[in-house]
Length: 234
Image (cartoon, rainbow, N blue to C red; front, side):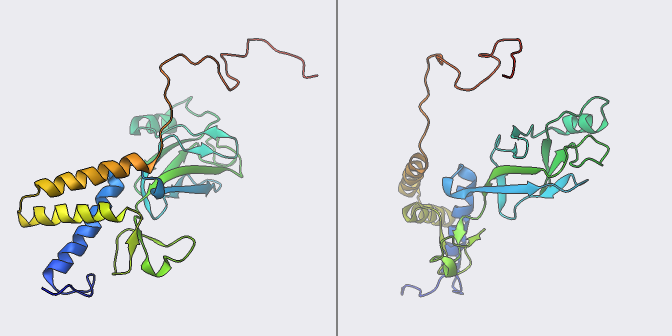
């Protein structure tokens, strides 16, 4: 059998299947962990009276506890449950100085509604919010690989497209999925795939040093190291 010169546009069944398995492997890996090459950040410049703002087009899932009010230097509170959100909107005493949020469909919704004229006690404008997220753009447009920042794609569409993952990881994943689809014995391919996946996860990011001992001090000013009382400003 002669090796095909093209895969993406090849009408033959096996090249089409291999290309589909390539995309399936990439999409599965996006869901597997918080890969550092998939980190994205976006900012929201709030509009008077607008509560919901669209998520980025490549948004896959949020990175929890990265939602911040950059204007007031406060972390946002959330994501809120439907029960909490109804309480915020309908309760008598439910609004505080910090923005709360939830994800609804393809939007992030904030409360209180930003702006001084909303009737909901919203923070005054200008108000900038920011958060990190995991992008689903694991594939790279082959026409932009030489650019400082290649264009991200949700899946490969042509032969020259690449991806953010290690080549050996992708090859072992495709082999495993191909043999499984054909009903062949996948024992060795599964072991190879799992080994490469474990290596990729272990090498993707470092980890903090965790101490089992009690922290000897608080590095920041908190209620634990500032006594009650008041002091003159000069």
